[in-house]
Amino acid sequence: MLRVEGVTVRYGRVPAVSSVDMEIADGEVLALLGPSGCGKSTLLRAVAGLEPADGSISWDGVDLGGVPVHRRGFGLVFQDGQLFPHRTVAGNVAFGLRMAGERRVEGRADELLELVGLKGFGPRRVTELSGGEQQRVALARALAPRPRLLLLDEPLSALDRSLREQLAIDLSRLLRDSGTTALVVTHDHDEAFTLASRVAVMRAGRIVQTGTPEQVWRYPTDEDTARFLGCTTFMDGTALNGTIQTPFGPAPLTAPDGPVRLGLRPTALHAGPGPTPATILTAVHRRDHIRLTVTTSAGQVDAITSITTPPTPGTPTTLSLAPDGLAIITPTPKTPRTHDVL
Image 1 (cartoon, helix red, strand yellow):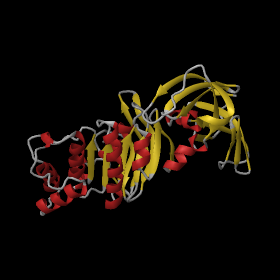
Image 2 (cartoon, helix red, strand yellow; image 1 turned 120 degrees about the vertical axis):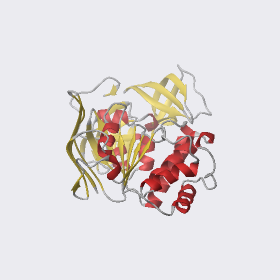
Image 3 (cartoon, helix red, strand yellow; image 1 turned 30 degrees about the vertical axis):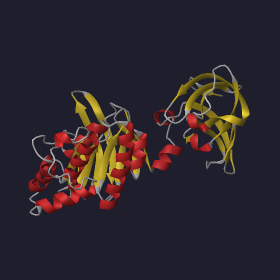
Image 4 (cartoon, rainbow, N blue to C red; image 1 turned 135 degrees about the vertical axis):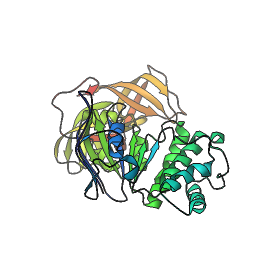
């Protein structure tokens, strides 16, 4: 088990990470999720031993302070892979094995290449591979010495979206099949929720929320977290007996009875047959839907509609509520903000 207690990292007088506490159990995949500059990569580098830090970092109760990077038993994968261009694919994987003193180099390298979907790629030069294939080689090299913790710093961010989504699914399967304990740093919540069994949201050098992907997605701890996770509109509702009453209709969601603060992602409101009249202000095509800004009697909100029925700004429509797009925020904020529905 990795345990991080009160860890602070400073660059000069500026704290990049402030008093962070964190645990990762054996076999668990934890994602550090947050915007660029929030300190997540710095925290990962401190765990790896690449950044000096105040506080305590330990593994199975043994303090790692003063333990050099190569003796921590951790594997690292960075966003650019950092492969050796003069070596073959097999040579890159074998390097990690030889550094760990492994004797059965060739057989283990072949096993790992098959595990990451690159069976038969051993003789090829890494410069001949695509970006996704190079990241698979980097992953195989990091897994080769059987690290007790795998550290992945934005491992998919340099890839195009479709390849990133597929590789995230493959990587999730690989981590679970191999039982690897891992810490993944990412700014992409889809990637974090695909890979991780638990998510820690970072903001301004601190962890502001930790939970399962389902908990973090449905119950963000505050409006800033909800906004980072895709909520664009905020409103008040009332919960009673497992149903939340909203200005756009009831939603069957679990919350304590009484007033609740809600965040709406654009997917929470669908243009089409529904009870709420609206007028379309703007329409923007996305990959698999059209994103709308509409005005209603309750205020201006975001919504979506089918890409097969492109709307015209200025025309009327109606809205229906899709509870899957709602987030329940606690505690209730003191004051509404711009783009609120009151």
